[in-house]
Figure 1: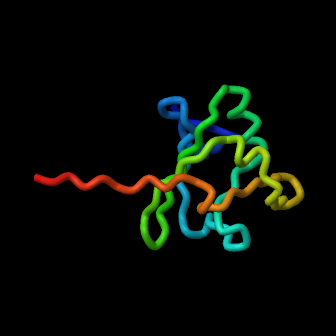
Figure 2: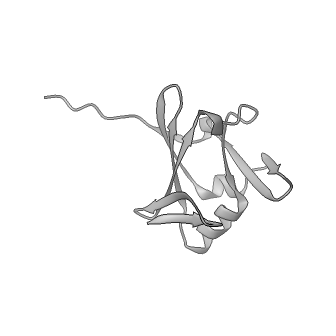
Amino acid sequence: MNFIMNGKIVGYIKDNTYVTERKKIHFMKKYQGFGISQNIIDKLLGLNIYKIKILYDGDKPHTYVTDIGKFNSSYKTFNFNDCDLQKFVSSRDMVEIKPQRILV
C-alpha cells in the first residue's frame, strides 16, 4: 500500500512496516544517517506502524531496519524551510540487512 503525504508517495507499507527508498543525496553527513519528517512519524504512529525499512541506493546498496521510536525520540533534527521538521538516526544505530547469497 502506497504511503502518501501531501499528495506525494513517500514510501509504502508492507507487512506492517514503513518502507522508504533513499538515494545518496538523502544521506545527511552531519548525522551520518537518514531523516524522516515528524509529520510522517506522527501519521505512522497513528496507524500503529512501528518498523521502518530504508532501502538505500548509494555507492553500494544497503537495507537498514529500525523502529520508529528511535526516530521519534531523536534529538538530531533539521527544520527544512521552517515548515518540515526532520528527525535523524545514524545508520550505525540501525540494523543492516545483508543480501543473501543463493548457492546452486
